[in-house]
Amino acid sequence: MHRPSKNSPKKISSDSQRLIAFAQAIVQASSRMEERTWEQGLDKLLQKLLKNSHQDAIDAALGYLFQEELNAYEVLITSLEATSTSCSITREENGEKVEYKALLIAVPILAWTRFSIASGPLSADTMTVLSSDLSEHLLAPHTQLAIAPTLFAIDQLPRTPAEVFTFTQRLAQTALNNAPFKMPAQTTETAPFLADIRYVIAIVAAPAQAPLFRWQTNTNLLHLNKDRAAALQQWRTQVTPHITGILPGCGLELLLPDAYFAACREADKQIRPLSIHAAVNYLTQALQVDPSKLRAIIGGFGEENSEGQIDEYRISFTLHNNPDVVYGIVWPLYELENGDSDSNDMSIMNDIDDMSKNEDVAQNWGQTGMTPSVMSHNKTPLQEILALLRKAGVNHIVRHNERFFTEYCDDCGVPLFLDKEAELVHAEMPEESYPGNEHFH
Image 1 (spheres, rainbow, N blue to C red):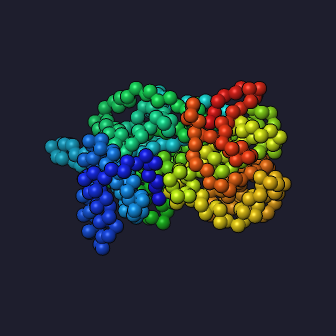
Image 2 (cartoon, rainbow, N blue to C red):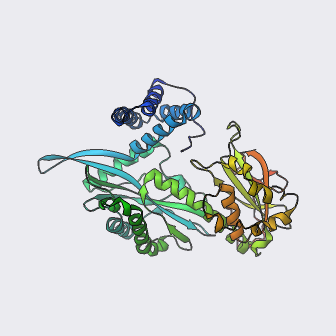
Image 3 (cartoon, rainbow, N blue to C red):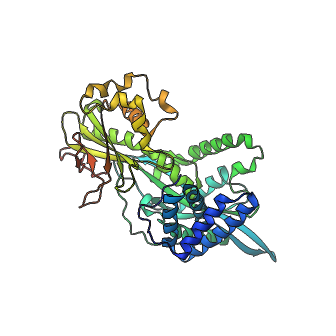
């Protein structure tokens, strides 16, 4: 389940009420025919609101349904994503009107480094390589493609569904008219992270009844997963060497290009393990210590008014013999992930609840038989974090069981992290750290 904006307005306008009513009607529909009738009405209303940038009305409806009716909320958010990232365009060809459909896609690139991760304009050569490989390995024949000429950081992407809708419409016209796409001037600075995501954004268009992706051309659905896996492998093989050239000094992992929101969500999940890997690697080099000399401190965080819900884990790092927090990372929870369930997991309770009192328990956690390979299926978020820390060589782990409110530094806005005594502090690298003291959050 998608989670709504934490700043959703409370005012329910007439447009918001209509969105709510459509979503509820879809949930209550007794037949597919009735359901599709309501969906058409909902899509039409969403298109109108998005075109006029009435994002507040949409946010109000989402906020209300998230609190009152989760099934209807999921219907509305799914329709919103579909409407903002797709469109139909009719144009005349050889004296006949031909209807095209277009879908906004994202090409996620996971990158990790102890230096900076580049973003910004893409060269003509890079655009040519990406266009050729997308068409050859991922897209169905006879599709038309347009790529936005920018390598996006997360904070440079369109922020709201209304902005995504406008971006989709403009890029779709570019694809079908074979015209250049002019990016607006980028004014957003990119925050430095040791592990981060970069995106190439594109639109793929095809006649209304034609497939968009290559795996849709195989009529044997039993091979769908195999076809998608093969497409990803070909994509990585062909494109990774070129991406290495535009992201120097970075470890890279390319994910499967897919529909915009779906690809972004998958990238958000996949970057989390790499954040732990990158943090431990950076700290061991910068502080010139072995991973076993690091201590990790884990706490669950949530909004003050979220009734006990954990929205994210924050992981602090200190030296084992020093209480100062030198680095911290945030592990956000998405969709059906729920940190609350971890508190009821006795296998975790037995191993780490008393770590703050006895760190020998933490050192023995990896000897309980719950190794990362064994725990690779159906792990809770906390189990996955613990397995990754173990794999990285961090032996001293403290977990604070209390749920903390999400707080940020008043001066620079970065998250605050827990020390061993459960005090929220600013993570700061020592001035004498080697090979430099880059300020990462």
